[in-house]
Image (cartoon, one colour):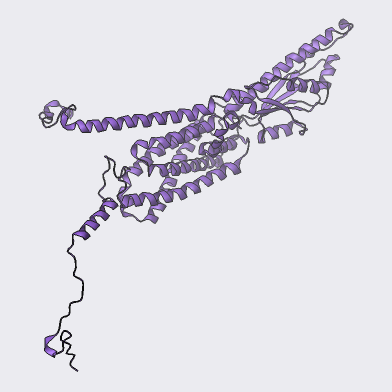
Length: 481
């Protein structure tokens, strides 16, 4: 079978061909070189556009961390609460750390947990009774649990990357610094007493007066969580791009022969079906690799969770498919990668970063389907930071707007096809690559005018023909009266 590739079978086939340096094709070579230089320029624009969008959103992340607020909540009301609060609020503020504020409105640890899960980034709580327990231990009580003094409350389900990089580290670092400082002050005060030898305190409480425990009210810090939804949606999007390009390249006969209303209905229905199938595969993949109880602290993966995953992915894929197909219908082949890059990069960035850690321009991430879909997935899995109304509303609004825009795009594309303005691949009339069997409408008009001008002129006036048998003549005026 491999013999078909033998040079022996190709003997003489090159006899009628010329060298690439031959003068007969020099003009064609010159055109190809110019086209390839244009492609290089377009590729340069695309790569710089993509890299600028991504690095512009993350390069100042470490100096914008003070846009995040974490809170100190004093539920003790005694000396421990007052001193810890003062130490925390006196912490030096740097661009790379969150800002500490005090919350006076919460009155229980459970209330703080609910608040952090719903809308906060994190909080350091001085537990009720911390001062009384420490005073009892310093007076000689045998048992003392230093970790009962403070509780660090975080919610990794709000935004996994920001929580792990900045919030969690800020809570832990500050609590450790407060514990060391409090211990130093307490030991110094004890040594300054009149007769320390006569006192019999609990030395464990003296050396380690305050400690802490950490509670994650919406845990999402499992292995794949920072990239789970990102790469799931990315796989769907890349799969859709190939299908959309194929549809664009093979849809010429439809635009030439099928009614507009049928096309306006067909493409959204096909895109919805494609989104349903691909998002179904994504939901199955997550179920297979992470479920049903992928994390002992995360919410249980139920049948309802599967369908929420599925339909959330469908909404994300459908909106992105509609958006990209609008572009693909009108762009020439060398430009079709540009909207893909400018769609993929901001969407990926919206899931691995957060608005507080990016310049103001990146508030556009609120509109990214990846962001809204990932926010819904994190809420479904952890219950953190519920913004269901906003996320679903944005996705639905984008689907409606993109469907309306696609209807207009189909209408414009069909006009371009029927009038010979663009061909099957998207090249426009006037391009050296343009090829369409439908004549260009201006050429048709010009041909019609030329044919009309070449016809012989018609004589003006009325020709009168008499009927000879009745003796009546309009020519002579004999009317037979």
